[in-house]
Image (cartoon, rainbow, N blue to C red; front, side, top):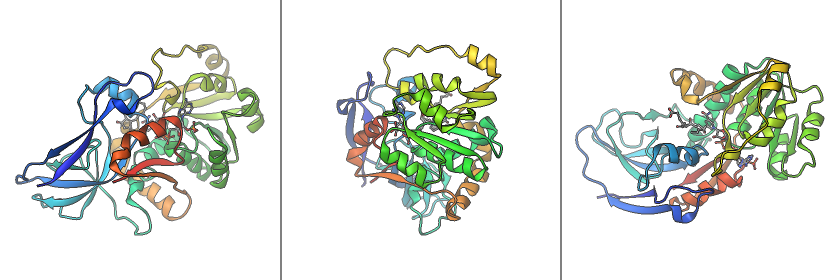
Length: 328
Ligand SMILES: NC(=O)C1=CN([C@@H]2O[C@H](COP(=O)(O)OP(=O)(O)OC[C@H]3O[C@@H](n4cnc5c(N)ncnc54)[C@H](OP(=O)(O)O)[C@@H]3O)[C@@H](O)[C@H]2O)C=CC1
Ligand SMILES: CCCCCC(=O)/C=C/[C@H]1[C@H](O)CC(=O)[C@@H]1CCCCCCC(=O)O
């Protein structure tokens, strides 16, 4: 018999999540029926969407939503022999039984790369960067691209793909260590948005002519400032709005219409699943770029399933450099 641990949402988050909002539970899993597969989670993901999504789609007592790289440990399903690795969307759990539906097999995996990258650069965040840049920003060689939360899972891939596409890349991040990392992986300009005296001036200095594309991961006041530095016909990909995820009262901004009109801007929100039909094709390209060394991957690994709430809260505080993952 296998005992499975899970983290549940004990209490809906009010403002910034607290340790007491989570509860660790343990259950004994039943025997497998024909067609069933028993998985153990090897790496789990913590992602910003879990914060707003919990309110929208979860009730107290539910297992926290999320994805993992999991390995088959027992199988009554010939499609998933023991030892097979998949990406599953089974929540914060150490073990789970699946009927084999809604699982994504990992592609042939080069030995030298950790399979945790299937939750990051060669997974959902990498796909978000890829489709956001090509389909929403519609980047062209010579464009100047700005990205926020630039040292994170999505942002770090955005910058590197934009460089592959022949763009000039400017990144903003919340610590000097992150800024140094951005320069190391090829960003042309990077600054610490928490310590610059004036965001307007820092943005102007990084690109005096303004920005063709803005890959917006944070929203809020920062994005209102960027709006006034977009070039004519600039494109804004609204990917995330993490600066507001913990707000109890929604932020009020300067409104977007006047700068959008003056510069004839396009602004479009997107959820990466819009391109699920092109997932395999894009993952192959991302994997190839990683293998060729064109995209460098950084991970912020927390060891121990027990530490998942701390890892999640750390992500929302900006403690991660690269993709935040948990190694069970
Ligand atoms: N549309 C879609 O389909 C998807 C959207 N997203 C969105 O992309 C964004 C980045 O996600 P992901 O790459 O996974 O996460 P990251 O790895 O970038 O981690 C989150 C980062 O956000 C930054 N941050 C936290 N609070 C604030 C704040 N108040 N203001 C500015 N920055 C802040 C921190 O970096 P720092 O130290 O630099 O502040 C932190 O490290 C999120 O908004 C997320 O919701 C992600 C996946 C899919
Ligand atoms: C609800 C706020 C979403 C913020 C943007 C974000 O981080 C999106 C992440 C998606 C990621 O690809 C995996 C997911 O499941 C996230 C989507 C969750 C929101 C979907 C809401 C749309 C709907 O209700 O149909």
